[in-house]
Length: 221
Ligand SMILES: [Ca+2]
Image 1 (cartoon, rainbow, N blue to C red):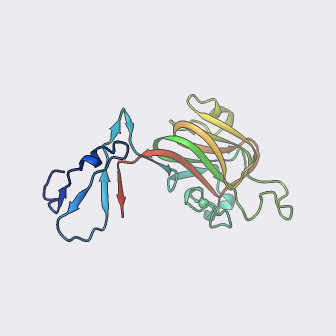
Image 2: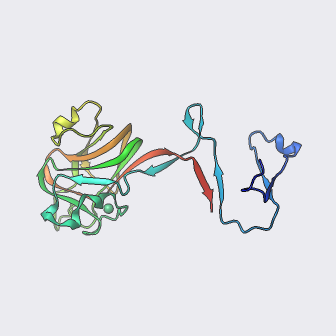
């Protein structure tokens, strides 16, 4: 460690011969020269090794991102598209759900802000009703849908046209969504859409888009 104004209170410790032999469990340590109260320890890694980030973290990159949908249920802002990326997966009540009207090929989509290497997407169904409960909605509402992923903007809201758009990844799910249903992706993408191949209300509790994001800094609090 090079001493400077930022680390004048620390001194590097020369590893002992025994420590140097621990090649599979290498260590680095330092001694705090002065009495300090440490609020955090920040470790900064080298950025890249063999063209790949050394540390990555699996993150929901859709959280809080800009979302839109084919329509707004009864023009009620309680059901706006952002409810599907608000971090609330409970699916219980108007505070937790996005919903379109009864649209032909209803759709919902999110712009991740930049392209990520997407590993998988979680689709969370509502839990309060309309999931196949015989007392209110015998037909499950969130079922039989496509998940579409693209680096470029979707050029159309028509399902068939979008599936055939160059560079678009599509995955068809032919069942009722769970809490959650996980769709494997394994592709880069910035735009993610969920779209029906039929006519119904598209109601989503949450859409989580997971990517392994390079982690350049981490702190031990
Ligand atoms: Ca939500």
